Image 1 (cartoon, rainbow, N blue to C red):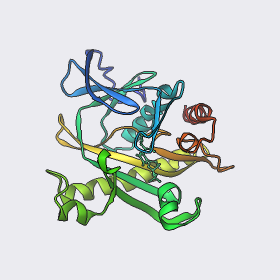
Image 2 (image 1 turned 180 degrees about the horizontal axis):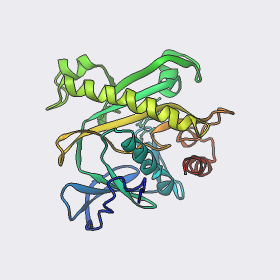
Image 3 (image 1 turned 60 degrees about the horizontal axis):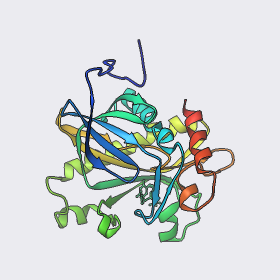
Image 4 (image 1 turned 90 degrees about the horizontal axis):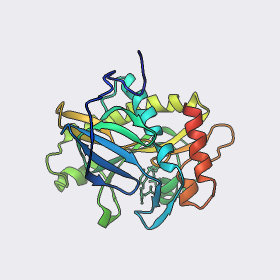
Length: 252
Ligand code: TMP
Ligand code: ASP
């Protein structure tokens, strides 16, 4: 039977979680399994912002961030290659193992956040076409914005060529097109989002990876422009849990 959370319809029932952590991030942990190509992405309740300088625990945030499973499942059915293999439970998704490229791809449909600050443009302006920015993932440098010439003129990233940057850029436009419509149907504006891509070990090609959640997107109510994402935490607006819950409810 069709199950959007198990796109491969395998249930991957042979998978067993190992008590071995491959990677521990700020708000999620990747566990190894008995299959070297399969990992478990576990969302916890930690919230951080400004490269970890601001920290708190938001109850049930991990459950709400597993909204990521719903979004990745939708993208899978729209023929986007992703690391998503299935939703395991409330807080966990099964993913294939990838080497993440150290580039964050930000797509913007409406001016907000750092773009608003840098260019002195008021938040809320609709851009003429989706704007793509690249950030070099480097905690010590606070993930600086880079352009293609920085990446290739300086050889910033090993084994990363122009065709891969072109591929992930095209994928980012495509994902944005799909998700903008997906959220609009739920009366939510996709203001901007951060995407990550990686090289999948098993199939040996580039896939969309990481998470897509209110932690990594700006999501505004389409009627009121109320913020329903991590900006509520970053800017101390209160109601973080309620907003994340609202997004989950609209997506179910
Ligand atoms: P920005 O306006 O702060 O540059 O953020 C753009 C988008 O990227 C926004 O949706 C939040 C997301 N984002 C992350 O997911 N992680 C980060 O570390 C940063 C800085 C932004
Ligand atoms: N993800 C980053 C952090 O945890 C920054 C952010 O989302 O604002 O610090």
